[in-house]
Length: 511
Image (cartoon, rainbow, N blue to C red; front, side, top):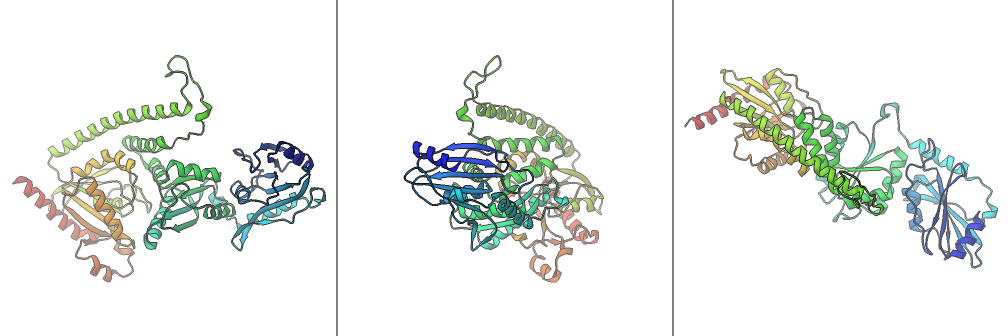
């Protein structure tokens, strides 16, 4: 086969390649130009039960050049069993065959190894044994267990210009988000740079290291901490067959799982569609899939245009439905105002303990988990103070840094509850080392929502998880009230102060 491939390549003056399955079947024949070949989309072609692709690429080089960096990138990103280059001599005959394979453990910073070049006629060692050995070594790195069965297995990647501490805290939060979405986190990669690559977000070398790591750990998902634009998503997926999502998509997925009310589900769907719209693939544009007949907009409309139109139509319907739900919510609030019950709203960073606090104060059983975004739908309960003053206390969705704009916009109907509050209780997880940054995020979002004029009472929660309680009390004691939502006795001071604040608000309104 090598001789015939070289002769035909020589006559056409083009590189030729074949993709050979482990079974011996030829999957594809590729015709390139003089300098390179372009591999087709491989889809789901893969050896049964294999870690590698199950395909070997053999192609010609006409100018006597060695295995190129581009060849090695194909080997890595497409997880080929083996890459072989046959140099064609001046008479159109095979000179030697040069091969490379992936290196499971890596060596001296290299992710591949080269075999000794041989003439095709002198090949005696069967490549099947070599490939089986390579897969066996990759298998040693795997930590797959029955517990992970059916779950996504992800490597988390952050490429940032932030300072080291901020970058590490943000990546740790991404880990929490992934765990909250029932994703197995296999590894994290943090790359700090003075400038982020606008097209690929990270360099090919770093991406190559991540691909090898994904191969070793049997990962099927890459999650980026930064929001990826459509160009970046396409660039990364062109180099890898792993699924690629960003932080925004992860948050949207968590919201989709957690939303229970009709309103919450509508809001999440709207945010997902708004995120999806500019990221629809343009790969099928050239196919110009025509539609026609009664009810179609007209011949010549591509599938991409149909998808966009359907999304826009759905967004319009969702907007109308959400408007109705918002009006219903407004009527419920109007009834509540007629009863002249003051409103106390809990706000704070996600997983700060708002739901647990509400449960303790009102003896309720609202879902309160040690997960980010355990509460999405607003929940209201009556709370009676020791002096018999009765208020409505409301739990709201937690805030988070870099909250996707579309998501914040979609949830504005829910957050309208906060506009009716007479007092905002800012719940802070004081056991979190980054609680100051979390406080700043919440305060900024309250300003963005134009809620800065409502009085705020700060609660430093989870004091029971702090190692040095005395030091914490010295640091934050004058800024708010220190409590543990799990210890009812620690909430007495909060109830006294909240009642005083509510009383002042009511006195002001009466005047």
